[in-house]
Image (cartoon, rainbow, N blue to C red; front, side):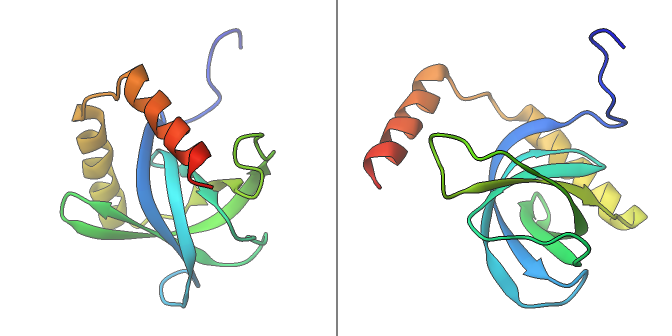
Length: 133
């Protein structure tokens, strides 16, 4: 599979505020997260808390039509980076209804239409983040 992705759905890179909740549909708010990428099958989030395998959760992100809730299960925990050693990165597998999939598709389309931040903007954000600790 030289150069080909194993993913069924392309992921779109984003930087969106998200929230993690316990339970697949209803449950207490566990904490804030940052959605780093999204697809119709999964997501990558940065989260300060610990998520456990085989535990139902749902992710809330703001979409074009209001807040979107997506049930997920933990697929993997990525290694922690040097820049944010306390923050964990989690790969999520989404379990969507057809209605949720349509709403997520609209969000992904909206993200694709947004201008990509320039390198200067990304660098400035990283520097601000570093010095605000």
